[in-house]
Amino acid sequence: MIEVGILSLQGDVSEHVFAMKSAMKKMALSGEVVEVKTKDQLKVLNGLIIPGGESTTQGKLISKYGLGIEIKKLVDREVPIMGTCAGLILLGEDNRNSLGLMNIKVRRNAFGRQRESFEADLRIPKLGKKLYHAVFIRAPVIKEVGDDVEILAEYNGRIVMAQQDKLIAVAFHPELTPDLRIHRYFLGLLKK
Image (cartoon, rainbow, N blue to C red; front, side):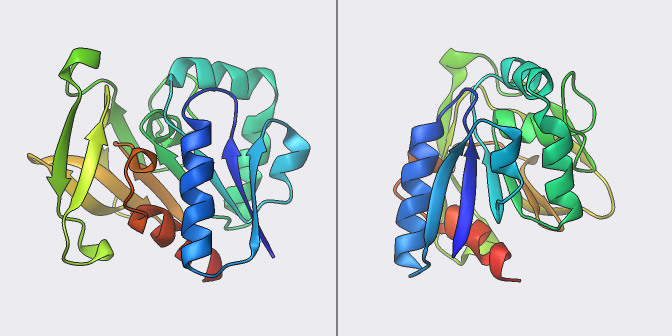
């Protein structure tokens, strides 16, 4: 039985819980989706999602509760981690309070403030030929990737999804659409 955690300090936690439970059901995987708030909860996970929200607040809370060390131990154990929007920022290596887990440099609010939020159809070859309808809310972009990072999606020449080993950085909010392909792709990493 697998256990996937959604970091539950701040942000769109319930949406990810719902999407992950739905994806697991579609894939006929038995397991639990847990809202993670403590170091002990991190120790037993098979996968972790760091949701969108406010990256500075989340980073400070990760530090305050000593969760960063345990999250880094997940990487050492090759446990898949996906960061969406603010979670992407936290995975990067050049922002305050970031975890520095991925070899990426990030630009916060790359498309503007809240009122410049938008939706767009993306080509994500790893997910198949069907376009993916993405929701961007005060979205970051990946401005630079290391040689060990694979670019999975771009929007208008800007990197909005990337993968390094079992770490996935997503600039948009897959939990806000009925399309479960990104959550299913993430769950597929648990099996490898």
